[in-house]
Amino acid sequence: MPAHLKYRPINETGLKDFLTKKNSLLAETPYFSAIIQAAEEFNVNPLLLFAIAGHEQAFVAKTHKDARKIANNPFNVYHSWREYNTDIRDSARIAARTVVNSSNDRPESVDPIIWINNKYAEDKNWWKGVSQILENLEKEVGEK
Image 1: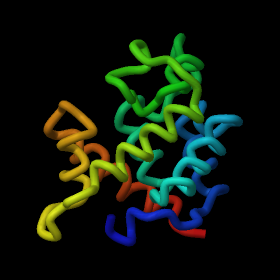
Image 2: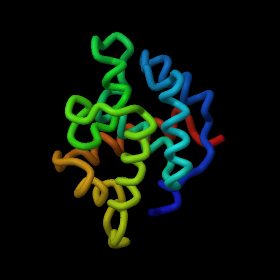
Image 3: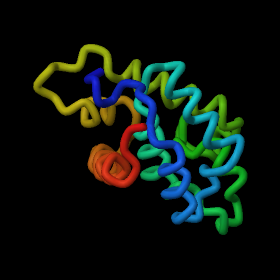
């Protein structure tokens, strides 16, 4: 994976503020810390995991009637939170591992998120949403 998608400390306070403005359940315990821990364990930029959750589940709004269930798997690993309702630690680890494994054998000329899209999501335009959210998070939150 390219350096900008590998783990690095981020501005956690800024990210929590961003998520709070979105009324996101992911700003709370245990969701926030589980995603950060999975990112570190698998050497993935935490903002990429949050961008995936942002694209897949709009950062899990607290007002959604199924928010607590969705927050268990905001990455929609194994198709969806409905089909695979686990806990946030498990789904975050699976998402991070999938990002890493999907990055293997990427030709240098191919955008890494497009390449990940090929194995992560059935939607061929998934990468566009994830890339846009990641770019926004990098501008809004940034590094530590």
